[in-house]
Length: 84
View 1 (spheres, one colour):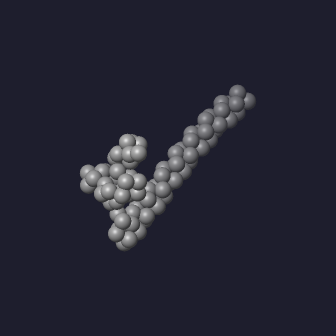
View 2 (spheres, one colour):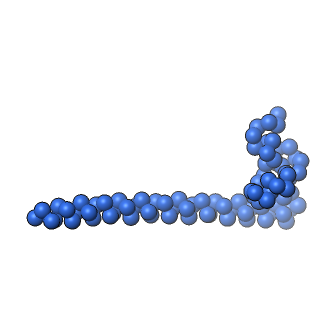
View 3 (cartoon, helix red, strand yellow):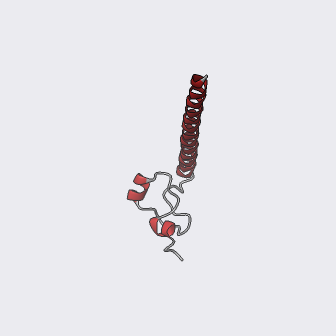
């Protein structure tokens, strides 16, 4: 009977591990869906000829920022709150 307790404890640990893995996969999938949504919106801005324009300042977003974050809608200044 002692083996039953150890087996159930092992199964509980295994279930917890699988649950944690499922949660991590769910979070990764959610981040990917959000990223794809941002990219689709960036494509719409390209079509509308508003891509690369800061939505706060109305000025062009630096190319280096767009290379790093292709779906950026804010300049560094606007993102950091330096724009009033």
